[in-house]
Image (cartoon, rainbow, N blue to C red; front, side, top):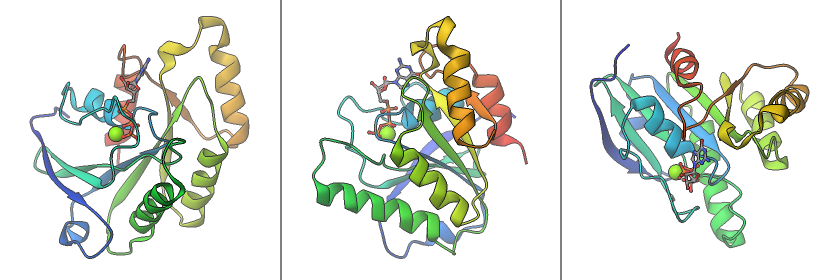
Length: 191
Ligand SMILES: Nc1nc2c(ncn2[C@@H]2O[C@H](COP(=O)(O)OP(=O)(O)OP(=O)(O)O)[C@@H](O)[C@H]2O)c(=O)[nH]1
Ligand SMILES: [Mg+2]
């Protein structure tokens, strides 16, 4: 598949929204604040600046929908666990993510959980995995920022992550140097 077009459609907050009910596939990107969700979307779409990646993490407060090839929605969710945000702000984001994950109106969606390859799985990531499993979501895990790993620590880090997710496949990638883009692309777009 080639990316022919990608455009921002709208930002969604809790409540009714017709966009959720459309028949198009939604590919949703979830992860901790600052883990590189927006950057990975840009990497996949081959657009440098379609999705604003933040110099100030925790800024995204809505669920951003991008229409790709006039066919599929890419969904950029706000990041969870931004340490510098107030409790209320974090709760608001948590509720927004949960609302999206539990929306029964969405007919067809695929979830991409992004974690930091260097940091590994945090408590909040593990909680998110529990939530995804509980709601029977089909999801894949991507470990971004692989460029931060030394060659010698790559396997060790990867194994540490694999152990905690019972050997679910992990895709290493870097939005910075493009590592793993091909594999990621195939995974994201496979049926
Ligand atoms: N070294 C490195 N830095 C990255 C990579 N991907 C993203 N970054 C940087 O990490 C920071 C956060 O990236 P974003 O794409 O905004 O992360 P996000 O998950 O969308 O952040 P929020 O929307 O705030 O939750 C930016 O400074 C990026 O340049 C990567 O693969 N390697
Ligand atoms: Mg973002």
